Image (tube, rainbow, N blue to C red; front, side, top):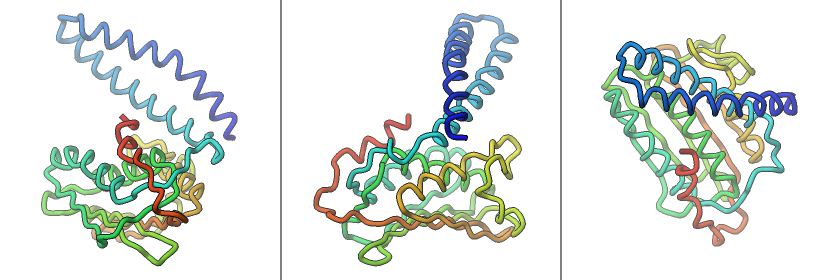
Length: 234
């Protein structure tokens, strides 16, 4: 399945890049409002296809190809939150960072993939939260000498028990335009880090996602490249 996903994604990506590029050129040179409107719709849908292709690429990517290094998780989480705050502000929501530790928390991980997971989960929380009085809280703390916990909590619409059982199934989604690959991708990445991810939710009360990851064996060798993780996602 991984090889098939990679093959299909590669075949789609090349012509898709050309189509998106030429559509953008036409839109920039167009002076017709009706044409601009149609091109905007086309580009939005093409970008959605591109997102699906990237998710297929992630599914096919084996653990051996990930770049693990000792990473300052506090710095990584902080940068992800700063990047997501503008999206929260557009919806009138409060995205709060709460770090329950003053010490350095280091994990041996692939910072780019872990960034991708956190951005995906926070985006899900933003989409589930509709009231300006509701909050999204991201917290990080030590569990013990070997493990750390990242927790994302929202006060959104919540998920029914029946749907919770199927959240990590491929192509199962609760979103109108979702692919059903996002959470499966997150679980695959966390498991490749020898970690766990679990989701607890109540209808009308919100959702909590808990990610437990092993710490780095030698935290003194924390990588200085962590700050590039969010930038590479852009």
